[in-house]
Length: 156
Image (tube, rainbow, N blue to C red; front, top):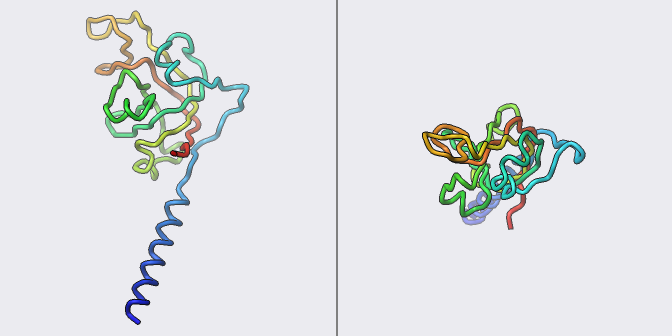
C-alpha cells in the first residue's frame, strides 16, 4: 500500500513538473510584418556592420542574459567561450517584453529576435587602437536596439 502511494505521488509530481515546464512562454513581444523587417544572418551582421546600419532586422543566435551584459552570439561555441567578437550587444527591456520571469530559462537558448541593428564604425578608434569597438571594454560589430520580439527556437 505504501509503495503504491509513493508511486502515485512521484507520478503526480513528475506530471506537474512536465506541465509547468511546457507552459513557459516560447515568444515575447510582437513580431513585425515581413515587409518591415529584413531577415539577416548574424554572421552577416558581424562581418559587415556598416551594410545594415540602422536597419530593422530579424536574426537568430545564442542568447546571453547575464547582469553584466546582454548579448547574442553567432553560435554555441562562441557563446561557450564568450568570444565577444562573434556577438552583438543587446539593448533589451526584459520587463517590457515580459521576459523577466523567464530570464534564467532563456540563458543559453537559441532565439530569433527583431530589433534595429546599429553597426560599429570599423574606422572608429577604441582605447587608442583602430577597432570595431562599440562600447567601452567590448569588441563587437554592433548592437541591437529597440528589440520588439524574441522567440525561442526548438533545439534538436
